[in-house]
Image (cartoon, rainbow, N blue to C red; front, side, top):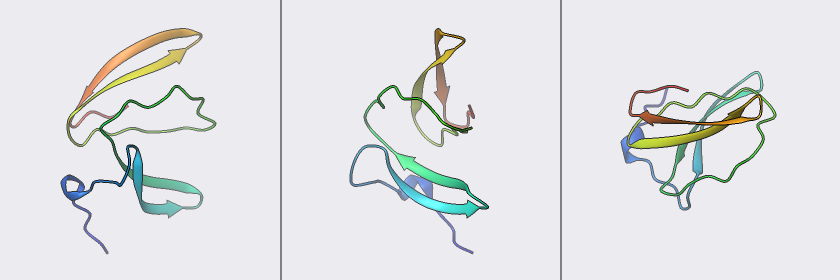
Length: 76
């Protein structure tokens, strides 16, 4: 087993990731960023858990854009 201390992780670039686990094709990754992410289409299910800071999540549902502010401890 390996302990990962998320507060100690930074990536070389915005949205860089640390692969944590792969369970039958489902991946768990820790991302670090200090920059916005570009709009994109998700091909599958995703879960976002905010470990530190604040994320302004923009998403579309049925063609309507929504924004939700996520803080440390929030899961989307």
